[in-house]
Image 1 (cartoon, rainbow, N blue to C red):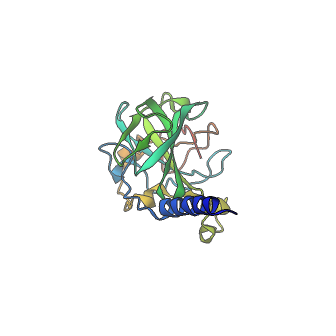
Image 2 (image 1 turned 45 degrees about the vertical axis):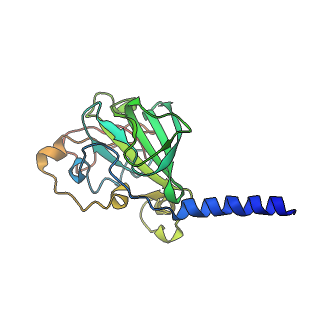
Image 3 (image 1 turned 60 degrees about the vertical axis):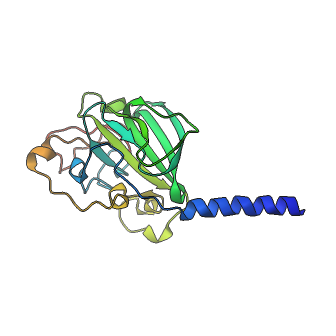
Length: 209
């Protein structure tokens, strides 16, 4: 291997390591939202339709509420899928993918670098969230597996990839009122209807794992 190729390889490895070690400084990806706007036990809740478990959180907000970048990142994809409706995928620090579903509109383009708080789109109820309270389905997936997270829960091996967004956001368990629970809706974006979770009193499930 000549010196030029070796330097190029070292540069790429250095960039990959830097992105892995880069701080996230995470923020809630819905403008104006607080920890009271999602249920603390919704991540990995089961049973959850054909997916078995719920692999994200649902942040409730009015249609048109800005979706903002939770960290530094690069927009990889935006488009429409059957269950998720309008969705967006962003690569963030530590080689983590941030997935946003049920958007009403987009503000960022694929290939666009973003800063924490940069506008990405707006909250909506597209896909199989139509007719249900508008919300953002938010999932975080690490491209580098965390084998120590594997446990004996249902599909526990998948926890080496799926991370709890609530924990990443540093959110303490919020105290929800019965009225707030009754206004909530489950979400299983890519798999269709699922059994009604016990912590949702009146809403029907909508959408993604």
